[in-house]
Length: 199
Image 1 (tube, rainbow, N blue to C red):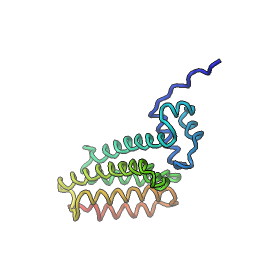
Image 2: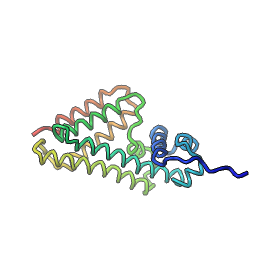
Image 3: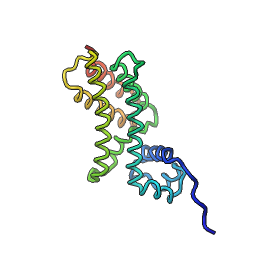
Image 4: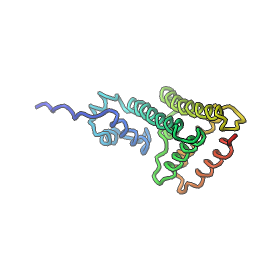
């Protein structure tokens, strides 16, 4: 008797579970058994829907970026906030809170940069695009804050955004191993007082 069809599943939910595995285990260490168990699917469904492990990772990264960038944009351009600078500080406060917790898994982009062989150009290109997308939305927010007269910039909005991007990735990586959030909070306070100094 032939086995029946595998259980139906929601691809987006399965990707979110795969992201959790890649975050906690890294790409290289994550096994197919761990991935399929977390995703609640069989290997056939994985290959039929997502391809091999590498293809699954690239799809997971794209899904992660879409969800993350939507959340970032919603915070930065929240009209209920008193100012764009306030919203930027709110975003970093949320990142600080998240990455200061015990068991923080960091950011999929940063952990993947550390984990992947940079000779894999397709993955390297996907990771660069991920960083560029975050840089772009931060640049847009800083430029809007500057246009509103909220900031006293000594350089371009793009340069400020790149500094904030580097800070955010550093916070995410350090949060994986630090036992205290003091270092992360200190870096955030410098950004708040020096980089985002009010007009």
